[in-house]
Length: 79
Image 1: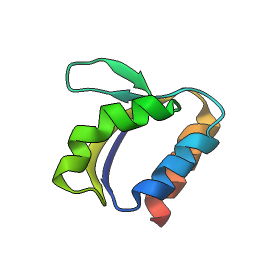
Image 2 (image 1 turned 60 degrees about the horizontal axis):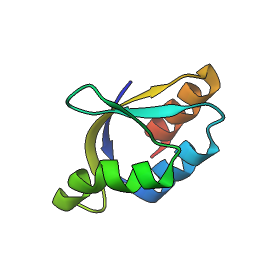
Image 3 (image 1 turned 135 degrees about the vertical axis):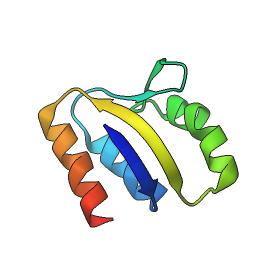
Image 4 (image 1 turned 180 degrees about the vertical axis):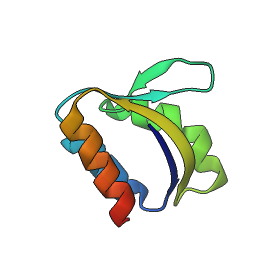
């Protein structure tokens, strides 16, 4: 799932933290990093935040549980 223009980064990570299953960030090289890990959140997104610490322009994630995908989709619609 590709997400774009995430305006509220803090709320986005709250949604990630509330997910029951694994949620992974897919890097440009095709690596997958577990976004439920706080360390991975900070390390993997550090470069994105250099441009604008208040938003995320685009990222690709994989949510393995259908309910988690639904939460993320609802977040994107309501942000």
